[in-house]
Amino acid sequence: NAGVMQNPRHLVRRRGQEARLRCSPMKGHSHVYWYRQLPEEGLKFMVYLQKENIIDESGMPKERFSAEFPKEGPSILRIQQVVRGDSAAYFCASSPDRIAYEQYFGPGTRLTVT
Amino acid sequence: GQQLNQSPQSMFIQEGEDVSMNCTSSSIFNTWLWYKQDPGEGPVLLIALYKAGELTSNGRLTAQFGITRKDSFLNISASIPSDVGIYFCAADTGNQFYFGTGTSLTVIP
Image (cartoon, rainbow over all chains, first blue to last red; front, side, top):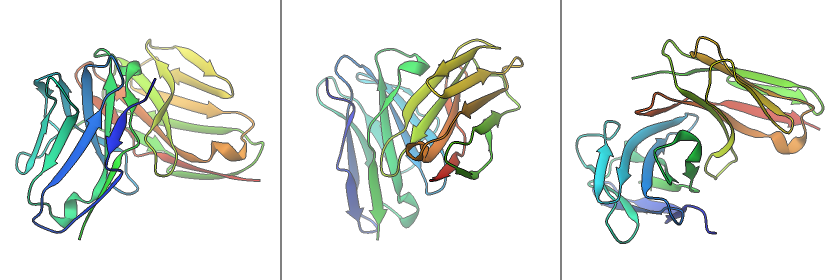
């Protein structure tokens, strides 16, 4: 039973490029959450999605960031025109239901913007 | 937004010692969780607490959900080298999760 998968594990982008981060939830999980973690800090909630729906995006910057969780395939976090301040670790978590303790985290994608 | 104040920020202890860390907030939460994060990995859930006053153990780990629903603590007894890592508290209002800033634990053999 595979856990939450994220790819790539490391991503380097130049300023102005686009970054696409993928998250495949655990089998049977239809709820996905994205978090951002800056060095020496805790995780900051970005967005909560169910299949084909964005439930809560209150933690996501209004510009350049978008997320989707299509009917088929992984959830995608997309960052357009990246800037140095976007450099961080991005984690996704999944759960079978909207229940806190059932939230399982992936290994993260470390984005570096040069 | 909500803020979870986690302390201490870092701890250096001798192997075998007990460890205590806590999280406080000015807000009331429905659930408190404690995670451990190893370098380069995602957080792993250690303990989840669902009721005020609840005391739960997981091996050498014990955590409590404060009576006021605004705080929680985590204790680790008889620390071992593999306890090294960053420990995060997290809390859930029912609508959103919040994470503490973490406690970095170093265990000296």
